[in-house]
Length: 417
Image (cartoon, one colour):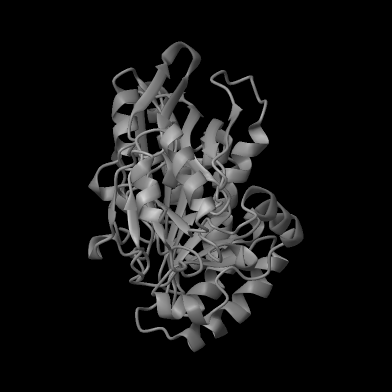
């Protein structure tokens, strides 16, 4: 029996892929839309029997991240698995299927005064995409990352085996390492079908404060913000020129508490203020004025080269300065040592290789890495997207254990995994 007939025989929603199903410039052979974890299991069993390379898609917002996607027989579309499965406000936990949009999950949680305390940096991100890409926004400074908030996960291995890890109670950490493995795996180890998260109460008040300062003062301001007793929820920077940078600090909590803490931060920033910043002045809430803190400095979808630069907190300013000197626009969580950088749209693969050859030793010396997160396929095909990675032999053994036939997005992750 051929692959198509086998999939239809398992009562799966399958059709030939069309141009709208193109993944990173390549058209898969078939599109399959399962409705449950059990159907994903049946699908992967058939994929293994037919040696069919499979790529997973939620809303398709990050299919151009990492190394170029391979030729695929199956595009596994999780858009029909979009249910919010459980919300237990008393325990501050919620579960959802992998295809559920984070925006829909947040709306449901907000109706009960709670939230998943991560920021949606790419509109349209789904639960599975959030975990698989491990993208956490500005609030990671206060509430942690996706990996910290993920307390349970259901996955399907390449051979169709269903596995669960963790539970619906925060203190139950059984299997938590499996959740950590899935976080940031880019769909190369298993198919995430459900996830359970730890929640936080929504603050009654939030306020961003921002100002433009001289680059020479940036390290002093960041050190003061990180050490401040006002406990900021986010410390962001935006830098597109060698002489100045914009700093934005978020405080959250009760109305009175936020007012007092915002006043303290405003006083601190005023000593370094160069005048109105490039974006806006302080305002309440997360309105248009501070939208830049919730967006990468580059456009996603394979249209512009975007980098992820990490370093220990004490190295953020040096990394930022080096990237800006190469003509990159830098933005990100200075309070967590995670920055993102946009390359000029005209950059060539040779020029990008030169930039990486200088940024990678620098970030390594400062305790971090330099990774090409997104970009045109032709450029990602010609540069080392991931760069040197510690523990690569262990990661390869995990790939061999989880996906011995190398059917799940092979080659997309570090070291050709």
